[in-house]
Amino acid sequence: KYSIKIPENCKTLEFSKQTFRVQEVEISGNVVNITLTSIYDVKDIFELSLEELMQVEVTTASKTSQKISDVPASVVVVSREEIERYGFKTFEEILENITGIYITDDLFYKTVSVRGFWSPKPNHIVILINGVPQYGFYESAVLSAMFIPVQSIERIEIIRGPMSVIYGSGAFFGAINVITNTSVSENPQSNISASLGSLETNKLSVNIRKNRKTSVFR
Image (cartoon, rainbow, N blue to C red; front, side):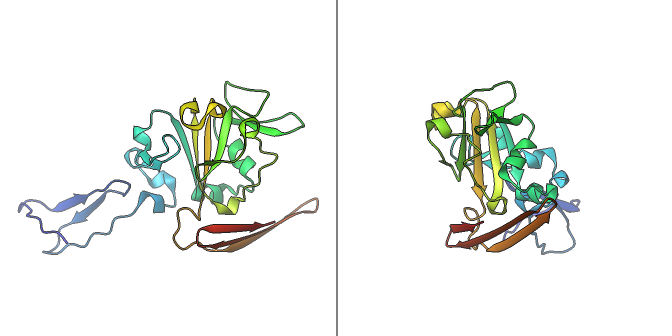
């Protein structure tokens, strides 16, 4: 509760807070109740203004939480809402639809590359889950051996450009950090998803979440 003195000719008040949407309230009495909406709770990203988008916080660029406007790098954030809207079924499919990222398949394994750069070995870009690198030096960007259930992804942060200072020599082209919903939710929920398609295609995924630990069955 706050008490503020308002000039008589003032008819509206504007309230703002970092990572929340700006709200304009019309003065109609001596008491005004304000409920701010987090920018992360907005389902349609196109409802956010450019200023609000620049307040989105990422942790991959420096291993600490920063606003995108303060990060001196090219940053792409894929939210849970976008994953559900476009119906992505696999982690690989999400990456294939990100501008500047492409998948290389040489029949032995699939690797992640960035536009303008390519390496015959998968040691140029690092993939992390909740900030933890998943493979060794020669396997940092191999998709063939990586199963990340889409149902468990809360958002993906992609930093394009040299990140070797932070993540080692295997991150010269950039870093991809997969943030799961168990790491951001105090009360994670279990779910079951199933899909059927042509040519006898089917998939069943069961995610059991409890106390920030995830068990995945496929």
